Image (tube, rainbow, N blue to C red):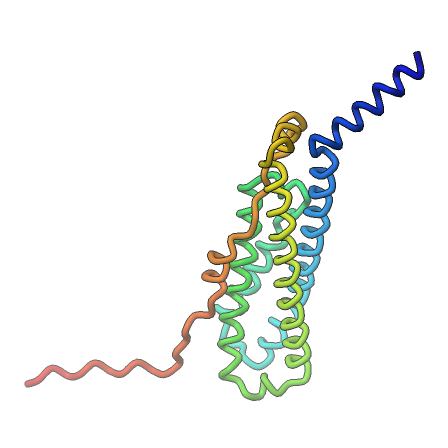
Length: 205
């Protein structure tokens, strides 16, 4: 009897292998790993924000609206629980992406403002923070690209026959991915003009 059960177990394992179960598991773990790196790098950026805001505030206290925008965007990012469960909830994933895009836009506006303060730009602390921020943005790009690729592999796997049958049985669904174009639009720095607007022409008498 035990030998018969062992044979059944072996056949079941062989069946799962042939129907793509193991491949789905592998791809799913790779997606989780890539997501962890994305979250890690975004958290690294968020951790830089308070010091960056304080550094700018010391030289440009009058830029309250911009500083407040960065602080609020950072708070919104911190309020979202970026757990692996987000990967199975398109609405939660979109909320996470929107919050990160808002912080990117707020930081872009802050950096535009800093161009008007030469003393700030020459400050050693600010320069160090900018170097860290630039490095972090590069890491975010790398992590996002890796995540996008792993999600593509996973989604193709759960949609391709016969893996799609296995995915259907075990409840594996397509995972949401970053919409790169939309976020690039969100994070595009606005044009800021500090020159006073010309006074309207006096009406002719």
